[in-house]
Length: 115
Length: 116
Image 1 (cartoon, rainbow over the protein chains, first blue to last red):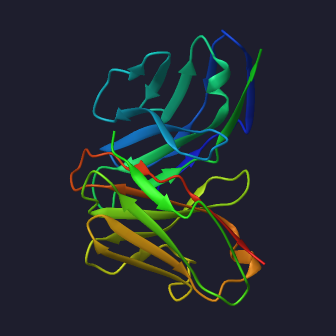
Image 2 (tube, rainbow over the protein chains, first blue to last red; image 1 turned 135 degrees about the vertical axis):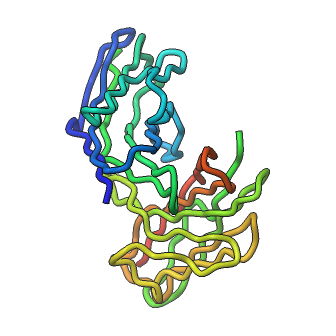
């Protein structure tokens, strides 16, 4: 079974600074997807960014980018120019390309933005 | 983007009663829906996967008779917590996706269930 590990329960960053959230995963599959989700206090899950394992290029969405290291099974999220609205729980998630395609979530990292 | 509506957002019920939570895909056909449970300050735990017209597939440790899932149409799935107990109090979240390898799963707003 696949597992996702987020080793940072909490992180904090000054507004306008850059922060990196870590995520590692374990799988024997070669084809899969990786995601970062944001869960603000409203509890609504919001997709931040996704990465297809077959793509070598790291995904980027505005201020959010990932560092995908397939061999190391690492998938970190970098948030540049942090804003107060970025404060939330961030979950890393894995999804197989086949089968039930269910999401496997990490434990989450609570990100605090200091003004 | 696609919208998934979950109702109710909050519900309080008495021990021993049943409560139904609805998950609707408003602008797409949800061939697969997922139900999660989230404890305070914890991650999402998958409870079950349901495909339209089929019986749900439950994760290990989830009681099928307590958490009844019905996915009778391509836009609606329901989770019924039967004979609820205080330990069933939690935040329940559904997500839905359409058929295809590369399709996204969209999440409902969640339901906070409190059993008193």
